[in-house]
Length: 114
Length: 114
Image: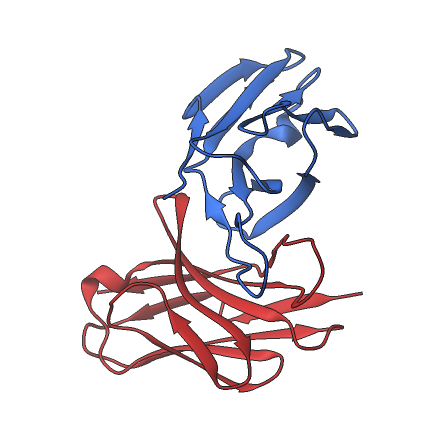
């Protein structure tokens, strides 16, 4: 079965620094979804990547999906304390139809020190 | 626009007591609905999945059950809570059709079983 591995598990950076979080799959990804979660709250959808080589940005967060569609990276430029939280990646199913369950990574915990 | 509600936000229950968590979605019809449990602030475990009224798929054997009495209502229940049922419970919805599988999450319920 497909698994998603996220790295690093946790990250502490100084405010203003850039950082990258990775999400790697054992199989081809059919839709890769990035979410952010503040402690004790629900997940907030950030962005979705579908095509090999695709790149999307939202404010200071950029996500990329590699050409082979087996790895995605989330890059934060000039981090701020508001970026702190847990970042999770989820992947869509490899088959079509009614199966809309996502497979999830374990998350990366990010702390940003002011 | 679509919104998802969960209640209660926090719950403390004794072992052996019943449980009922409710989730409702507004602004969409025939959504797919999901119940997750999250332990230690990460690692989403899919508990139940529903594609329509009365249609429930159980993902893991457990002490819990789910029901979908109305199109946009999803309920998580237990007749007798166990200590191991403690955790953060998240409800989510996704579109029932189309190529995108992104899920949208409620604010979550923190359940503590004593």
